[in-house]
Amino acid sequence: MLAVASLSMSAMAQDDPTEKYSVSTNSFWSNWFIQTNLNWSSYTVGTHGLFAAPFQKFPMGTDEKEACQHGFTAPSLSIAVGKWFTPGLGLRTKANVGWMGKAFDSDVPMLVSVNEQVMFNFHNLFGGYDESRVWNFIPYVGAGLAHTFSTPSGVSKAGTYTFSAGLLNTFKISKKVALNLELAYMNYGKEIYPGAAQGGIMPKHRLNQLSIEVGATFNLGKGTWNKTPDVEAIKALSQGQIDALNAQLTDAQTENARLKDMLANQQKEVAQATAVATKTVTKVVAAPVSVFFNIGKSKVASKKDLQNVADLAKVAKDNNSKIVVTGYADSKTGSASYNQKLSEKRAQVVADELVKLGVNRDNIEVVAAGGVTTLSPISYNRRATVEIK
Image (tube, rainbow, N blue to C red):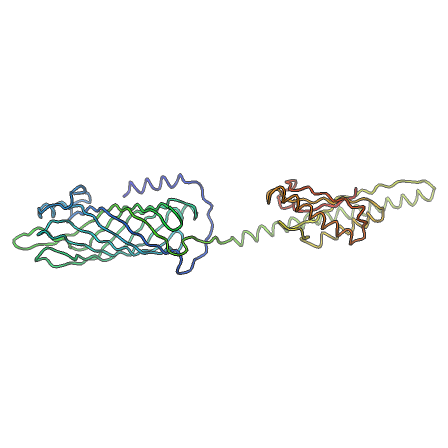
C-alpha cells in the first residue's frame, strides 16, 4: 500500500498546474455515484502476515489444517453508493460479498461485509478542482460489520466488526462514467473463519483481507461543481481602477486650468495686436481630453469626463478650430474586428456629445484606432480622446 501511495503521489506532483478556486455547494441530490467492482482477495488466517498465502489457488482444496495455518485467495464482488459533499471530501457505503474457499466439508463459506468509508480526493484537495481532470487519487478509511452466511456443518454462523482502508484511483471516460482501480485492506475484529477440527471442536480464526479491485463508477445527476467568483478580489480590482481614473481626472483638470490661463493670455495678446492694427494668427494649443468606457461598452462610464469635453468644445467654438475624436479599445478583450467597431462607436458617441455642445459636425473628425495596448493597466485603453487639430 505504501508503494502504491508513493507512486500515486509522485505522479500527481507531475500534473500540470491547476487554477485553484472556490466552488459552491451543490444540492443534496447532486454528486451521487454508484460503484461496482470485481475483486481478487488474499485472506490470511489468525496472526499470520498479510502476504502469507497470496498465490493459493481457488478452490484451495480440503486440507483444513493448511487453510488455518496459511490462508487462501478467493474472488469477491463489491458495490458501493456514495456522495461527494465537496470536491475533496465524500462518503460511501460499500458492501462486499466474498467466497472464502472450498475448504470445509465441500461447503463454500460466504462472507458479507458492509463498511461506511470517508474518502479524500487528494488531487482536488491539493491540486485544485479541475472539471477536465482524467485521473483522481482517493485514499479512504472506514469501519463496518461482517457476517458469514454459509458455514461447514456443526459450525455456527458468526459476525464481527471491521476496519477498512484503501487507495482508489478513478480514470474519467465521460461525465457519467469512470474506471476504477482500487487496492483495499480489511481487518475483521473478531474470530469468524472456521478452522480445522481439533478434538471434535471446530474453532474460528480472525481474518485479514487484501484485495485488488477493478470496476466502474457511474455518476448520478449533476457530477460537477460550480465556480464561485472571488467577490472581494473583484471589488479590490474595481476600486483600484476607479482610484486610478480619479487620479487621472485630477491631473487632466489641473492641465485644463493651466491651458485656460494660457488661452486667456493669448487672447490678451490678440487684443493688443488688433489695437495697433497688427494682424496676428493665433493657434490654439490644448492637451487631449480622455473619456473612459467600461469593458465592451460604448456608453460613457462617468459623466464627469464630459465636463472636460465641454471646456475643450468651448475653446474650439471660440476659435472655429477643428476637433479630432479618436476611439480606442483594449487589445486583450475581443477580436481585432470587434475592437475596431467598438472603438468607432466610442468615438462617434463622443462626437455626438460635441455636437450637442454646439460644435459644428463639419469641424469634427472621427478616427477609430481599434484595440491597443498604449496605456497600462490595459483597462485605461477603453477610452476616446478629444483634441484640437
